[in-house]
Amino acid sequence: DAKTTQPPSMDCAEGRAANLPCNHSTISGNEYVYWYRQIHSQGPQYIIHGLKNNETNEMASLIITEDRKSSTLILPHATLRDTAVYYCIAPGGNMLTFGGGTRLMVKP
Amino acid sequence: GAVVSQHPSWVICKSGTSVKIECRSLDFQATTMFWYRQFPKQSLMLMATSNEGSKATYEQGVEKDKFLINHASLTLSTLTVTSAHPEDSSFYICSASPPGAIYEQYFGPGTRLTVT
Image (cartoon, rainbow over the protein chains, first blue to last red):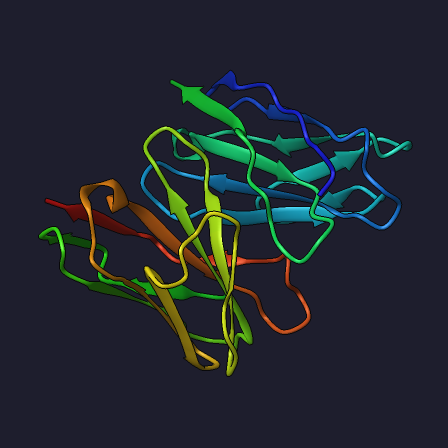
């Protein structure tokens, strides 16, 4: 797996966009970037993944830089229920390796 | 979306006893399931990869004789914690991938094990 680096914590105001960065400077050309989140005391939830094009689904958008060394997960209108730990993963083998993630706190 | 269930959601057992945790993929077949463990305020740690019809692959440092994994069908994997000790108390989470999408894992809700 390519090493990923995320800030340990972030705050976001309810209703505003939450932009969660991830650095993956050692990512190889065929490694995807995956994002998961874990709400307290629950199993992780798959959010989105991408290779080099920007991706959007009903949960979030994923912006990957042209050099693929970093990406940003965007929650366009954060709600209190989006408070969770967000994990950015670039799996290279046949498994997911969870790092420390970013603890996002959405505040009223 | 794909749904994975776990049973039980929580269990308390006495030291020395064994506990079985079930993981089921409800609406898809999973040739591969994964078992993770998570201690308080820590990230998920992969314990083993469970393959239907074959032996599980354990991560370094995970005792295969203590954490028995059986993947008897395409929708069910079980983890048995044998001779449990208080240090085995943790949050155990399974995941499964639809065929051909190994990184798009769907996680169960987790099982909180407390060994007294």
